[in-house]
Amino acid sequence: MENKIIKPIAHFCSPFKEKFGVPKQSGLVNTLQGTIVFEKEYSNMEIIKGLEEFDYLWIIWGFSANKENFQGTTVRPPLLGGNIRMGVFATRSPFRPNGLGLSSVKISRICINKKGLLTIEVFGADLINNTPIYDIKPYIKYADSHPDARSGFVDTNPIQYIKVEYADDLKENYKDIDFDSLTSILQLDPRPHYHKDNQKDYCFEFQKHAITFCVQDKTLLVTNIEAIQSK
Picture (cartoon, rainbow, N blue to C red):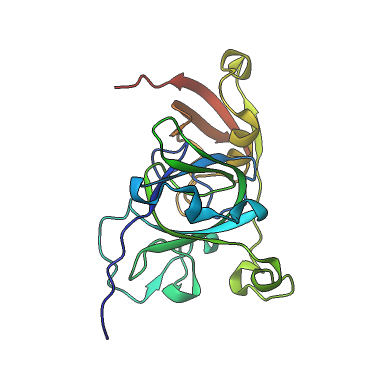
C-alpha cells in the first residue's frame, strides 16, 4: 500500500503550553478560546469560501507533544482510572499508530491577521499551543450527530465534576484571566486519574499564568496565580 505524506495546513494558538490542564475532549469547556492560524500558502479567503455559513468544524491535528512512536495494541484510558487496558482503536488515547486527533469546535470569527495570515477563532478546543493542524472540515449535523449512539465504557463512567474555590483575592487581582473558562477546566479535575494525591500541589500554565492548586476535602482550591514573564 502506498504511503501518504501529509503536512500541516495551519497551527493552533492555545492558552495551554503543555498537556497538563487541557480538557480531555473538545466541547467540554465551550467558552475556551483558541485560534487556527493557517500557513502562508493557505492564507487565502477563497480556500474557506462558504465556511462562514457553518457553526462548527472538525479539526484533524497531530499529537505533537508525544515524542515516542506507539508500538503496542492497548492503552489505559484515564476515564477507567488508568488501571484497565482497552484496544487503542476503542479509545481516544493520544498514543496511536499515526498520532492524529479529531476535535469539534465552534466557529467564532474568520479573518486575516496583522501578519496577513488567515485565522479562524474558535471555542471549545482541546489542543495545546502550536499543535499542527492537517485538515479542517465543516460539521454537518445530519451526518455527524448520533444522539442515540452507544459509547462503550464512556456510558458507564460519566464525567465527575469537582467543586472549585479560589484562595484570598486571587480573582480580584488577575482581571486579565478568563476565570469562567479556568473554573470549568478545574471542575473537570485535571489531575491524572491514577495519581490523585490530596497532599500534593499541582501547577499548569493557562493564559500565560502559572495556576497552582491542591485538593482538600473533595474541593479543588486554587492557592496561587503568578504571571509568567515572556522570555
